[in-house]
Image 1 (cartoon, rainbow, N blue to C red):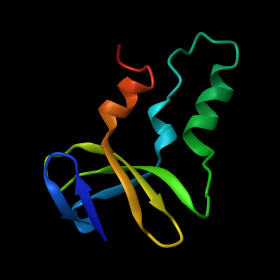
Image 2: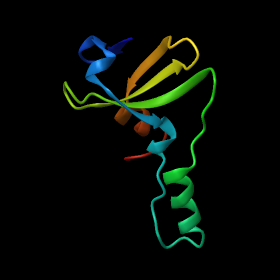
Image 3: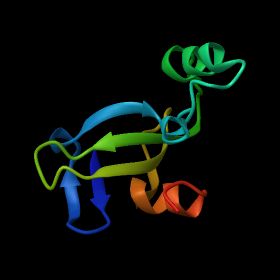
Image 4: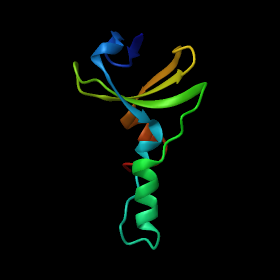
Length: 96
């Protein structure tokens, strides 16, 4: 599988480590919340396992060590989009 890195161009998937659902970008921010334990438990342990299009986190371990959000069809492995995770997080309201 080839991942088209936004900065470095096409790279073999062997250079990357799969880290799971891209929802991990939206980690809970405060332990003070009334349901903080439930929020962190859900964040840390509960994952979707869809068949079809899915947004995933990938880490470029054997390259520039960047985090990517890869939109991939889990049944065909076809990649439809690759973005830097920092750009996705900023666009979705984190890191401002």
